[in-house]
Amino acid sequence: MKDCVFCKIIKGEIPCHKVYEDDYVLSFLDITPRTEGHTLVIPKKHYENFFELPDKEIKNYFKGVKRTAELLKTKLNAKGMNILNNNGEIAGQFVFHLHFHLLPKYEKGKELWPKQEYKGSLEDTMKKLKS
Ligand code: 5GP
Ligand code: ZN
Figure: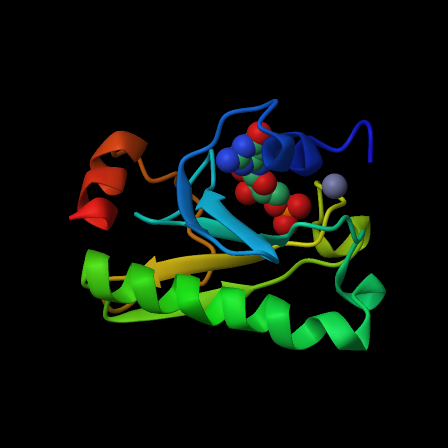
């Protein structure tokens, strides 16, 4: 998709902080993270949303989601994680290339989707992920 920002990330036309990659998915830090390690997992093929994902792609996509979640939990020492997906403008989808949000959680009592952005540096998060 020519004008899709996430397709441009896959093609390397827009940089990203890569967390995980295999033949089917790419995972990278969200540019406006809500918690440390907030990551997006996208299929390498362009599907607008979850409803467009063909059944035959489900296994490969969710394998990538799980691998990414495991990596984040271990490396960042998260206590838990919210895994979210917005479908359609009315549901808060802004980028129309399927993505699941992985939000590592570290302390009790925090909202599902924190109103405040996480202000730490993405480079510091990447150092922990690569350690
Ligand atoms: P949505 O509301 O569509 O579920 O979420 C889209 C997410 O994509 C937002 O959290 C936003 O911060 C993130 N995002 C939008 N453009 C870019 C980008 O160019 N790079 C990265 N890393 N994240 C982006
Ligand atoms: Zn796309």
